[in-house]
Length: 285
Ligand code: PDD
Image (tube, rainbow, N blue to C red; front, side, top):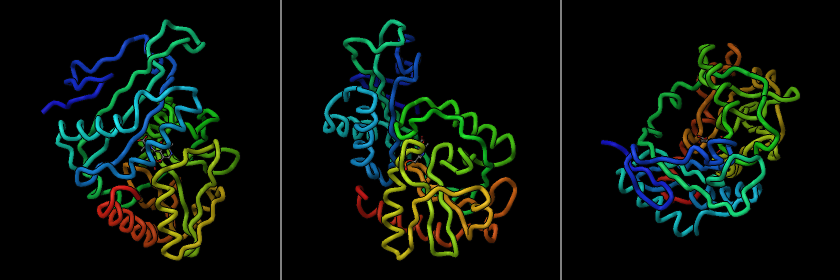
């Protein structure tokens, strides 16, 4: 069955889901996006994702395409039209169509699209087996706190990781890991201290990160928001990453070196379970 997309006010088949060649999202990556998971047909932590969308738009002086009520009703309709019970919903807002010019158009009219992916997120082999990462230099721009569609550098890093026989890359800047290509990175020290980089312009403020750090503190873990090095990953008791699409997923190796026991970590599994139990209980974490 072909998917229904949302494009600028209309629900259309894939072959009709089209955006102009002059769209600034296409020409300049002048666009922001959000990804939300769908579990049991419910959008998980959507309010927080929409709040981050507004922040990204604000940082780029872009207006919201419509009210949050309209966004949410469009999201729900799209899930219904595509019968999505479990999967992902992507939404993307660009500054819209204007003749090619580096300066922003005087009266922009944003382009607004949404699409869904049906996926098994809960029952994911990566969660059972853990993943392996390689470290790579972080060559992205300096405003990674804005969730823009300028994703070429992380896309190249991901491909380089796959080509090297790993699953993802953890990116390094000034000797410290920033984050994964599309996720936030963590280590566990002595089975009880969870360490992840502090927020700032160097990383995206993950919605999953926020929830998982809250759950970790509630479960009695000490949370340290400080950068860490590749060597610290190699000597950690375990490591994991978080994102809306992968929740909490264990990382069992970096640069060919096993982390901890080399098996999925207890803390990562516990936090994944808490995350999923909570998400299945209530939509907003
Ligand atoms: N990526 N860091 C980066 C660079 C990301 O792209 C993402 C999300 C995260 C985690 O954020 P959150 O917990 O809000 O998903 C961190 C999404 C899943 C993506 O681009 O597919």
